[in-house]
Length: 321
Image 1 (cartoon, rainbow, N blue to C red):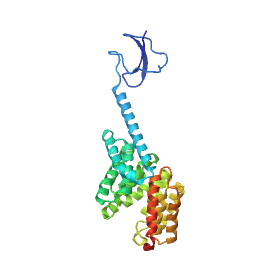
Image 2 (image 1 turned 180 degrees about the horizontal axis):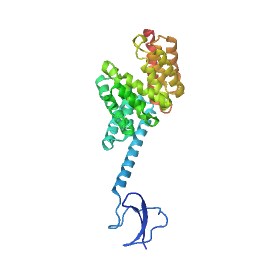
Image 3 (image 1 turned 90 degrees about the horizontal axis):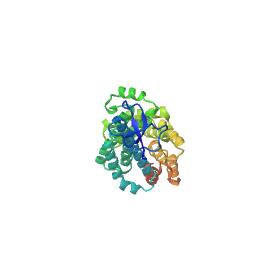
Image 4 (image 1 turned 120 degrees about the horizontal axis):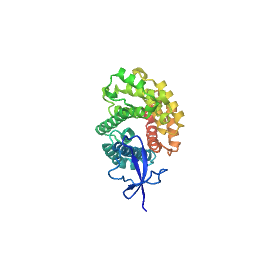
């Protein structure tokens, strides 16, 4: 006698039950859930709830694509060869774009896309026109991710008072998306640093990163402090720069990260030590970068770049100081 178990959903989509079927007859309901279900339903007697199947399918797709994007990001940041990532980078970006065509509201995937576009442009793209295009895409993805995940939409179009109010209302669950928005926006400004209308948005990026530190300053191992250190030292004191506050942010970022992120040391030397003309500090920070092991989980690619930049800054130090 051949019997089969079936998983059946009630018409109201509120639950499920099991039946054992033999031929054309429905036997007594199984007393315990069967180990396997055939996936087929007895024709004409039961109706499966389409909504449940659709939601389950979309959830699976969303989870898989989100995990894939996260794994791709992880593989890139832990690579130790800059040229390999440079060569393969455009393919990664196009792949993420393709995934988003099928799942355009996936907040995790949008955030991963924003991170990849921001990082690739920051590390590799020197052509201004290309940098503007890629950072615009990164910021658009970050904006959509924040809207999808936290229902905080159209931030780029708010006046500053409304912007500040909406950021103040965020909570810890919004942290990853706030940070991604801030870092993508900083990259967008960097690509347009000669446009004073773009530079005016620095205040918004600073507000985003300050909110991240208020909610959980150890997010991304203190990376928000790194951004705040750079933002507060971009201009000399006579033009409103706050180098001593910047120094505090750099020191805090180093403390939280355990000095694993060597780019903090490079930024500290470039943006603070050079601004205040502290040659001793400048050289000490950069020499630490060169001595350090770049292979640190989550930072290998960035650390490899940091060592190259440290050597370059040291070579030109005599001309600067």
